[in-house]
Image (cartoon, rainbow, N blue to C red):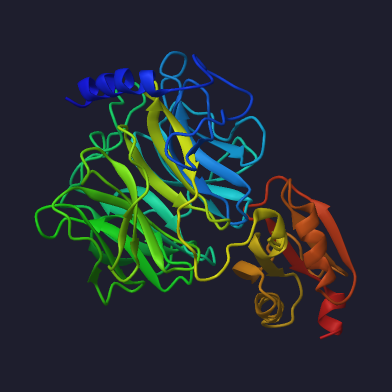
Length: 431
């Protein structure tokens, strides 16, 4: 039924399109408008789904597959200014639901690359060949959502069924992703500690202050939008439609929630007050509009098949005034690469708790310390060494400037974290 509907919609859309006729691929989005302010962001003839906006508002991550030449979804990024999409992952697995983490440095996503079991992975946003698995629950893990401080992940897990979402068998995002009663929302620290089961539901999304989560749940016979505290308490129902409401995301000021709903006959983008008040329909075109992602510059990105039935990323500016004026991407303060990098501190000296003391000083300055210990390979160094993985030289130099004494900054490809500080004797003498 969904496939027949998709064909019918594509026939309905064609007579309404003006300009850019017959476009299959452009160097940059066509500027044709459908509803006021709705514009196309990606234009390739591929299936492109699940947009996610980087914290600085400059980049969009999404899942994409070419059913003619490829057999799976991969993660891609594209600038919100003129530019071509960049491929991030290159695997035969289906990789979905990207989210930005560590500012603009990395992307977290779910993939079935591990023996067909869908779990969560992290990869460098510039397209590094290797990806890391930050934690494991022993269940299938999907739809990761990153807290504003990049310290916690909310995600959906279930052990009773297999999660199957395939490029080659793709029909539409909702038919291929049925909600299951076994799906539970969890939170976990990025290093895998403090795993906590919250409530039954899916599509978790963090509020801008990190205190609450919005999500989708079927507690009354149909899917509605709910919110709760980050610890699972204070459950609040936001939408009350007998239709299918899914995929919430918060406005930058935390006062609105965007979501997808078929209450008008087909999935459209809607917004609601975060307290469950006023509801406004944003898209009205007879197409499948869903998976909204709200950027800090005010735009809402979403996927849609409105262009001749082809699934692309689109955006719109909602007709509301946010409580705080959204910053334009160019006005945002640059994200510090060193405060988002994963830093390990090791002690090469015999001074007790020296690594812990150095790590605490760095943590107090906002740096992301993920591991503390004693160096096994290097002992009693005369001076401190700061090792960095490829791509983290600037971050390592900044970390080195925070340390007293003399430091050697060295690139090393085989370290497990982004930066490793091996504390030497000179630093011990200056403390």
